Image (cartoon, helix red, strand yellow):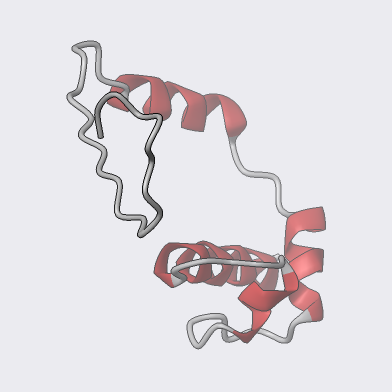
Length: 85
């Protein structure tokens, strides 16, 4: 079971350090994923994280006040119909 937990931990590290992931199997070639690539699937199949406890932790982290989101358009295409950019 510890190998599965190690693989889950490595999988979380690979997700966190990867800029973009185009396929699930791509995570297995991340430098931080130190397991054999089939263990990626075995870890997800065998691993059962404590969902209720995690949901409690997640719900504590959700902010209740609104956040300001600023978006910018960096495209080179002109938008003649746009009233504002």
